[in-house]
Length: 420
Ligand SMILES: Nc1ncnc2c1ncn2[C@@H]1O[C@H](COP(=O)(O)OP(=O)(O)OP(=O)(O)O)[C@@H](O)[C@H]1O
Ligand SMILES: [Mg+2]
Image (cartoon, rainbow, N blue to C red; front, side, top):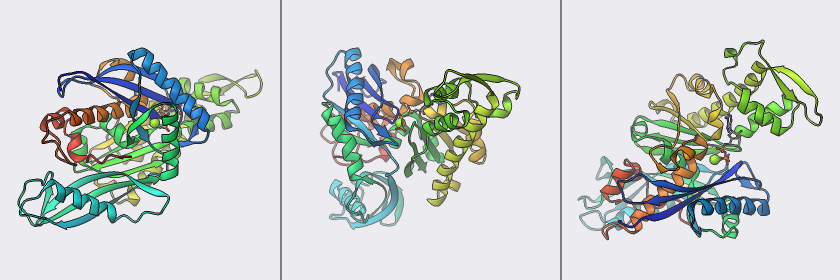
């Protein structure tokens, strides 16, 4: 791929819509961010559309800003999907190999068989399928079985489902804002692509993307995705708690949170006071800064415990050795890594920032933009794929140069990422 191509990702979040335009040069050159558009998200709650017109307008504003900056017209994009309707399961499936050698069709058949084994209620659909590993005639951990000799092919697959209507509502808003959706991508997968390393995936890692209305979870074991989920508690709950307890407006509470809240309140002197404006009046009151921290910590701790509980229920919590990566705007709360270390029994915790990009890399190097960076990264891979050499076909046979480029990320992801 010698010509520079542009790819677009739109993260329709609960608090902001972030549109990124990235230039793809070749497989070895990092992506260059050439446009970014941010608008306040007005029509979503907990990742779900509650006001169509507001959502369409927010998407339009964000896209237009990115268009102006990149000096291009945007017609199509990769778009994130999230929300607490997302659920995941791991299944296994088996097929007899048609010839003596595994063909691409056999791989596709076994993945289809894995999909078919999931019992879907009428209001849900499959949004993501990843092969966690293949077994050929009893030999496990085969990454790419195509062209290998064997008779029985098994797959362990990770399958994510979501509510059709909820996802369709987000999609329709994006389309009505004038954007054709090339691919819907699960947000925890997108965020992981931007901030989780291969080494962490091998050791076992938990990604926690704390947004405004949703906290997305992705857990990787032995290099592949093992669990995906989303819970409807996040940064806005911290703000709401502050507003309720301190009796301020949501705006004032948001500002208190960003300026003063420290999730390890014991590090603040109990004599340190902050001035707050009470709701509905201009009256000011002095409250202890430590109190703001206590309130924030309480909610963050509860959220992280819910994440831990989900992982426990899925039976994978104890298998994670690599640590925890926090991302999303909510991870910017000072002291949050300490809270996470305590909740996750001393596992290493770090904040995941998208790095290694060119162009406006400073602007996007914040955890709040990790999802959008992941979307353009996946879009770039897909573009490379489309214009790649002809032997590049099917679900799992990505060319080496792309694998190298993504640091092997795609090796463990199938091309069926949330096809429309
Ligand atoms: N410095 C900060 N300290 C604490 N919280 C912060 C800070 N900066 C941003 N946040 C919080 O981050 C949250 C927004 O995060 P983000 O932009 O990742 O959400 P989103 O992607 O729009 O929402 P979602 O992923 O839930 O749909 C808000 O609740 C905001 O208060
Ligand atoms: Mg988000």
